[in-house]
Image 1: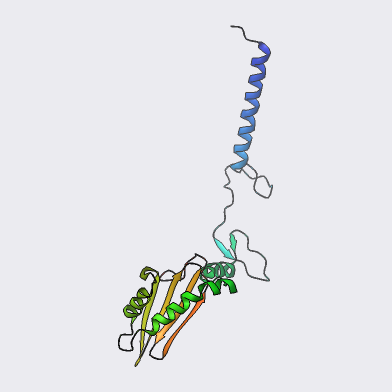
Image 2 (image 1 turned 90 degrees about the vertical axis):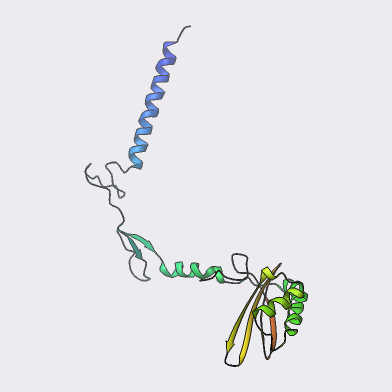
Length: 185
């Protein structure tokens, strides 16, 4: 087995170059002796770190020494999941037979039985999946109002039943694809 001297010298040179490049990259990523603004600092001096979060206030300079954030944008983003998708006229037309069936089912609930259980039962009898119906009864003095949200393919049916009658409308889903926000939100 013979080895060429040129090959091993070249291999060693490549290895040394790779090690040097690797060492430079590691020291560069770790901060080394240079700060982010290019000013040399002492080896035992720690690299400056943000001390917390600071709100960005319109018309004022951006804070330094902390992580800046836009509180208004965060709040708007936090509430965005509640926004309903707008239905097109074609989508409303497709949901219309289901809306009418739900409205007809609500009309069958008697005044004496008006409550969440009776409303859910009437909707189930009309062919709606009880797992996709959210009914909530509210009693105000002598008036009972049952709010109803039904998840159907392509959208949501939202309405109410009360002693004075029933109403039902078609709406789009919220950003997560459902019709009802999670409890506590």
